[in-house]
Picture 1 (tube, one colour):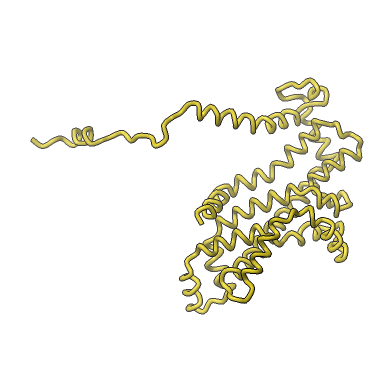
Picture 2: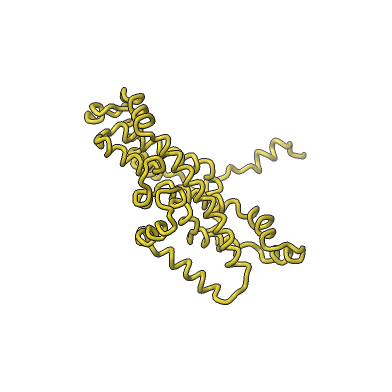
Length: 288
């Protein structure tokens, strides 16, 4: 007698086993790590809503100084202007680095010329040189071009990026060479090959580089402090510190935390918008 379909399903169905067994202590360790990492941010948000007296009492609940701290940072210190400056500079530098690094990666992978490995080795060598070491030389160079106290001083010197060039080179080397040969047979020039073939295949790497370079530029402190004199063109990190010192209110903990929390929002938004490309880009780099 033939078995009913329901009987066949009940006999052949095997509940899949989890590849990773559930270990409660692993989840506990991860939870503790999340609490340790997230507590400073949580406390900064709390302090941003408190008055100085409430901060001194170390209370762990929202305070009554939210509107006062907001008005102090936005209206008195001009935090909005500082954030717009940082946003413009970070976006400009990120776009410039991507464009220049794309061209450099194209030249290092798809062109043949003497000394190519020597050039790439020099680029890698610059990765080992801290940026702060070059501050004095860069300061003199920018002054020679009369770029001091301008947006050009905060953007143009940083369009070249050894990290971006290295990542694009590694990504381009993973692309099948048959695509380049096919493009040559179709009569495509190098720029057509770059914009019609390489860039569509590189969005994940581009997204990862944009996130890294945006965060790096947004968090700059030493260089803007050296080269920018006017408050109107200052970036957010330096602007907050200098403004608090100038008004002799460097112990305004609530407004200071309000500024820090607001200044952390644009990088967080950029990461959330590009997190998928960021993870894919580094997954591709790891696989290579």
